[in-house]
Length: 233
Image (tube, rainbow, N blue to C red; front, side, top):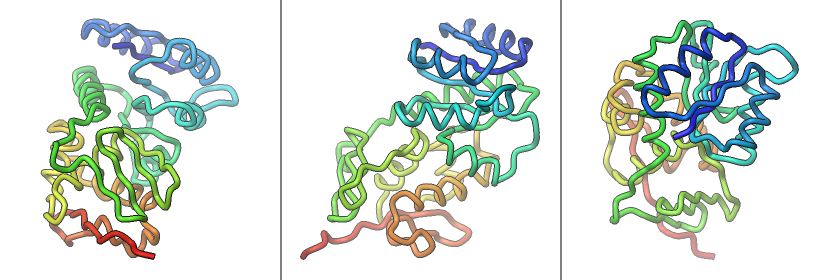
């Protein structure tokens, strides 16, 4: 596995790099966004660890957006301040999958890197590999999602969330189970994650995200995926 670290703080680059190498990662490190984007194109890493605030014209959010134009590579954002739901939404809109607050605890960092890589390699059950009702078309095996014939890009985490809900279609997945199945046991206490990510997923696949018909909320319980009969002209 190859990891790209983009951070203007040398101490952080070195500390994260040492920890990753101990876990048998090949590591490439850069000090600014432009260099990071060029290195991404040249090295094609398996995961990107990206600081949000960096000097120069290209901050972490911009780098993430540029990466998302060409690749589904998992992206972890590093933030030097407490993370709000709006921070997560801004990161998701740029294409990020994960946030971690500085100063980084190295064992937690590795656990979350590994969990993020697991999410990017979704194991799909044989029973629910595809869904098509004429409006929404999902091929879990090929990782393709289309809305009204238009391909929709999902981040690895958004795709894993959709896959888990579809594999349990018609049944409510409670928030704790959703956190464990999509994000991993390391995230059991991050109770706001499902709400924020479900909201983002609805924006991409629902005709009216405010009145969803596919991903429904069971108040104070969890979420369920609802199938629909194929549209007939």
